Amino acid sequence: MAVSRMKAATIFRGAPIVFGFAAIASPAFCGNAPPPARASRALGDHPNQPAAAPRDVSSINAIVTAFAESISAPAGGMIDRKRLDSLFVPGGRIAIGVDPKPGRAPDVAFVSPDFYADLAGRGLKTTGFFDRVIANHVERFGIMAHVYSSYGSRERPDDPEPFRRGVKSLELLQSGGRWYIVEVFYDFERPGTPIPPEYLVPSP
Image 1 (cartoon, rainbow, N blue to C red):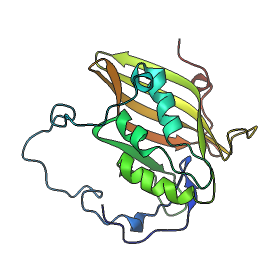
Image 2 (tube, rainbow, N blue to C red):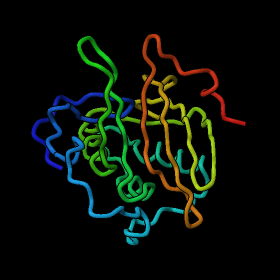
Image 3 (cartoon, rainbow, N blue to C red):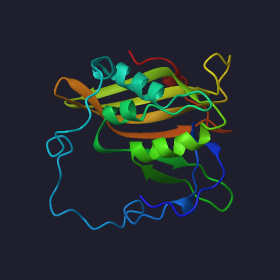
């Protein structure tokens, strides 16, 4: 994926990444890539996807926690790229919500786990980032599950309070005795948009 320009490092959407709309120059990123000749099966057509640690993917709560841990690292460190990639189906993506501002409507930007790791690494050069699950609100049907996972973000794991809270929306697939992440879409609290109380406690 081509990158034409990067803005200054910032804590963006609850994760330390360098990001700007002008940074993305890929037609595929903008949704202009030509359609594939046929529908691709994420798992069936990619048998060499990195294996995940069984403890990370054995349950819904386990994979949500593993995602939070894999994007966490101290200042000067790097997030666990291999672990992060192993949680997703091939082609899985992270959707970064763009909050509204004067003159800018809400939007979303899609990145791969690998590209996300590149961006996050830039922010981690100076600032630590630790993501912690608050509660998971789960709904299931057949092979799929949807999770609203509330979270708190800290610069150090022992910080008494998070500098930011928000909610991740995770689409999950159960296949081959494990769970996979198909997509993560997240937003954070801001004035007028608190986390609903029902998302601060685990679902029954």
